[in-house]
Image (cartoon, rainbow, N blue to C red; front, top):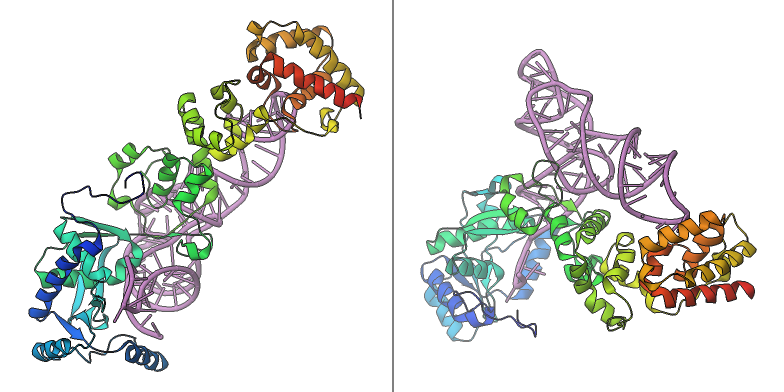
Length: 419
RNA sequence: GCCGCCAUCGUCUAGUGGUUAGGACACGAGGUUUUCAACCUUGUAACAGGGGUUCGAUUCCCCUUGGCGGUACCA
């Protein structure tokens, strides 16, 4: 895909757009018809519909009844020339079974008689998937058809088509479905979300890949964190599980947090860039983005949550004065402590204004003056963040810088005076 | 209905003819902690049921049950 979202040609077996391959499909269908492996079917949709209803009413296997199967080719051609509309169906053998070895399921066998004469070319001249997949895969040199389990029942049709063309069929591997909490196949119709939705929410691609890969595969030992390269290196069909996997959001969240934690500062900033721009917080020179993002990195699940969580750094904070008071403390103590703290902090040089510097200096100062959690630590943290729950006071102070931190402390003191 | 696939903790799974059935997520408890997270310790929790085969089955076979998928001029 290019920047405008248009699919561009990459391989050397193109064209890759179905409408541009119509001639190819027609050529192959013609061959099948000529060889007696496919036939024109003139049955109307209406007749087919009625047929199915009757079959259902009689509890029979539904499927095409073969009405047009034995129309001589010459006659069929005449009817086509006369303008009758038609489709082309493949002529499934009526006897025997189709057996194949699936790379994940092992031997699978289907009774041919029960398999429908599948439409391979529609009235509008387009192929159905069944024809297209076989023709394309062969022409494009596909060696392994790896697809979801929902295709397993139509595989005999594909194998039969390969035989009709005289081609070698690829290896088949039918992967178990990914299902939702209700254990149904994941689909938009059930309100399930797409990969793009997760990316938009700020899930990391590598976490998604790791998570999904482990839904149905694992290395056989207890390792869980795998990069794409490692997955490729260790992958083995025999280790794919056959049961459907439930898409478990909790586990994805865990993976995402693990990957988030491991991101380098630079990488983290880069990945949050777009999100920060959305919030109008990208071009603020005032703060060091690496430090800002590190503030909340270990407390959130997604990048979007991260950016939202650090909002308090950039925005004017508003909060209830009451939360400045620690649960085991009083308003007076908070006010008093905050006042003393502001005076003390004012004397600290900008050079010492780091998390570690503040921690040791303020710690020492508190000890000397018998101050602590209730009158300093808690109110300070709330004054800086405006939140009951937040990162620690010293790290926020460092990020905000001396000037902004002191401003927020003074605001808090005023708030306490007025309530 | 018919055809097919599948079946170990709630979830993802490891595992073997004889194991205290292991791990991870989630959950519970305790610890650490100025809050929330994080972190550490720890706990609860599974072989769907019934028949075989076998000295012995969670493991191999059959049946049942259950779940899912397919049954289109969709993919």
